Amino acid sequence: MDSVRPAPRTGPRRDGLTLAVFVLVLVSALLQGSLGGLLPFLQADIPMSHTVGSLHITALAVGGLLAATVAERVRRRHGRMPILIGSAALGAIGAGVIATAQSPAMSIGALVLVGYAMSSILIAGQALLVALHGRHGAQMIGELNVAYSVGAVAAAAALPVVAATALGWRGFPAVQAALLIVLALPLLLRGRSSVDADSTGPTAGRARVALRRPRAAYAAMCLSVAVEWSFIFWTATHLVDVGGFSAPTAAGAASVMWAAIVAGRVAGSRLVGRLGAPRVLVASLLVGIVAVALLSVASTPVVAVLAAGLGGLAAANLYPASIALVVSGFPRRPDAAVARASLLTSATSIAFPLLLGAVADAAGLQLAFMAVPVTALLALGAIRIAGPAPTAKPDVAASDQSDKSYQGATS
Image (cartoon, rainbow, N blue to C red):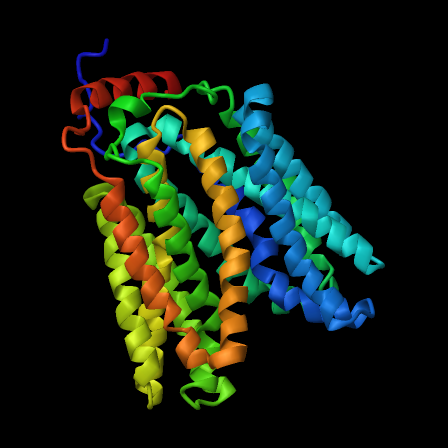
């Protein structure tokens, strides 16, 4: 009956559960990606100071830190699928509260829920992809981050369109809540029965890189994320304050940077699978150093746009490649590794841009931004310290056998 066998798959199998996680991340990213654009609408509808307005951004980070702190304990008690399903419901509740908020307390509290849900989804989703796809886990983490980027960019484009309709700006979070309930949740519920979502999977045999000093990967990740957020937060300001460009020119360069981030993540999701996370991470950091050099000498719009584009390409894969590097050092404990990495990088993404800003106030942004290439060099040193182990080679035979077992279980 099965006389004709299909050719063996050499790439990852994107089964229903994997696609459900991608959709969940994309839809969840809509609110985070539109928060900057939502704030003026919120402040117009609900009177608040700029300080109170900034608390909405802080609320997202606080929610993410809380999720990273308890993620592994919650996973051990309840499992990955309940986390993903519960986080989707929690995100829908948070979006619904924002859509109906009548006070800053309501909107800020809702964003704590949204931040908690988004961080929980990323932690459990990335660990699940590593468990499901083994040696292809790094590539799948890259594709998951592509889904997040697409959602964030789509949000920035869709918000003004929705706000101009009869729904108004409140319609945007309401639409996101509806998508979580009618699209993401049913896909998760359908996919949960196909595999054991709490299996550690064949990751020990499939790990593409086994690190000599795995804990150094955490340092490499924090330093890499510091470089990433420096580009995201400060590129446009650097062009205005240091380069002397107009705000519209800087905004145009920033849009090029974000386009480069999305394109870079699409390409990086493939490159991480082919070349390995360390090589992609090293290349990204080197491109970042070049981007800082161009930013420091940019005197024409063409050079400014080129510098911003290179900064976007550098930032694109610093997080996906570094989280893949961390997981490769702890293949038997992907949930704990991702949770710990998320906690450390959340703190880094809050602290480093603020530290850079404080130095810029004291000594000027041009001098302060020199911390970025220094940090990139430190990250390169941490990668070198981390590994790989001399005897670490992926067990391809075991991986292929596990691939066949997994494909049979999900058919």
